[in-house]
Length: 408
Image (cartoon, rainbow, N blue to C red; front, side, top):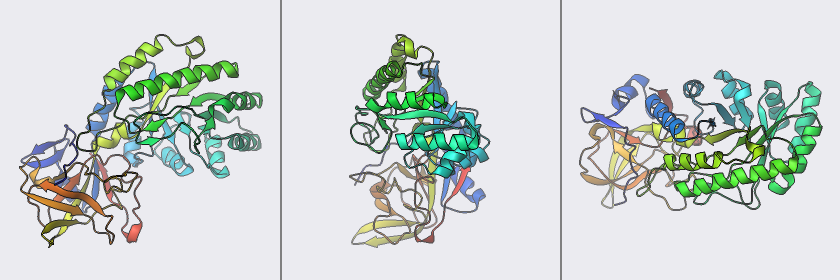
């Protein structure tokens, strides 16, 4: 038997069935007319952002990284909850614009931006987080051709990293950002060429559950930003401090102590150097805001026994929930939190493997999980599906197509 990850505490049972914001999951799926389906909780997202606002210093803005979940109704809702949005492609820029998000609230990071993407961002008035000197030259040339002043920040590749990060984005040779020692010269050059100087973006890693590691990384980011500002010789309009806030996916994971992070950041901000005193400060978060607020619901289409082991075969799988299958950067596969919808909170009765419908042994949603009895037609819910599910999984694999999505 392999333990399941922890189910977020805000999910409750109604008449013994899993519910989202008081609505039975089975009813939501019936109204959608099909499975698989992603169900996102409006209330859970609002509560998470409210808690974060209370924990962080008042001058800290919150940016949402839409790569985590770009579902249009969710983006529209986030417009009134967060201060800015971070994108990583021209496609995400189009999604943001279609959702009615103001370009002045959007920053665009990511290596390998094409000229057409740079042009679209400059024309719209979004901020470009430059990843290289070559990208800076292309952006300035495009701005001149358009007769527009490009809004330019620089993404910094620092020498330090976020300890305990599930995905390290800084420290040593990286495709992301400009090495810290070269940033001042690049900043002075783009300012001299008439760009609208927008500051720095320093993102060191993601999915950390260690508050001390995040506190240390934020202190390092602030120190580095001050050092770079001094070498540039001008004020720093904005500093995106990155994120890294993780959520518990696996057995033994503990929730992040954001109150302790906020208290430490408040202390640091009370003693900021003069060259950061008027700087606009923000954190950039994706999965922490929406990850636990989503579930992936799939229906059992077959129940079979092989060499004494039970397999619950579903109509979903890794083409919608790549991360839960263990194929999204996990070295050793562990079980996400999962439940049988009709028997939420009931005592386990059997050990079963939950697998998807794809013709590959990689398509696994739970290995040897201790679950209530489930049969053909029953629904299974995979938790922590609000981030990097629909937005990061290969929905076209084997012609399966995307899952339904709904924000309740």
